[in-house]
Length: 348
Image (tube, rainbow, N blue to C red):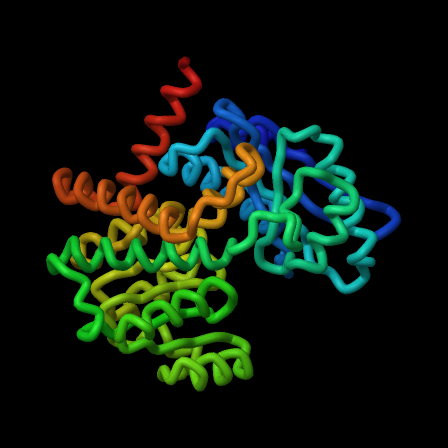
């Protein structure tokens, strides 16, 4: 492992990084534990076709750190982690997820994991036969994870609109939802029920057409979603959607979605702030499933979805008010506040 990786871990406060290779299944993966000062680390399993191992490792570290930030601002007795799996054709996936279950079990409760892009109920069921520390997709699990995340995003958007205009006034709002999977689809449904004009886009045309027809909302070409004029652009697919190229194409007042790491770099948030675009901190907006899962695993209770939404809205509102007072981009304020809390926990 390159010494530069160790330098990066030390600089960002990481505790542990595992490079995983299973000879039987062909699995290759990275597991990063960022922080366990307040409690066990939580993070889902992202399976994606990365261009290189370097890209997969970088994503793993970024996502693990973001999970700690989520825990800090949600005031959860937990820290952040991430398990990133390289999606390759020659892998025996049932065996691979069974192996991952064994890895998680060996950690003895220091790491809890669950769904993410590419890892759903089938994969989690394979793991739950091997470990106690995974989100069970069945009736014995926490349930309503996507609904919890979507509710948090919805209430975060509400906080943004109230921050700018004093009220949500949904009937006047034009909102683009990019990504109509479990989270984006639930969000689009909530917005449509409130009377907002919703425009949905997804790389899977069949999924997009089906949901848009069901909700009676406009279906967008995914290549043009970021160009579409709107009040709110809600990215709910993969991160990094706002970068040097797309930044200047964006035509919105608010960026607030359920994807992690929406900004390719923090400076892109700075540039949007200079243009007067309000960017909600994504690791606050998307923390609903984490809140639901953490309380279920550590306290054995299912927090109602509406309570999760209220909790997230309160945090978003607080960050936006501080950002306005300091004339700073909200993502910068959210990171600063999370790091202040983490530093205080480590000192104590």
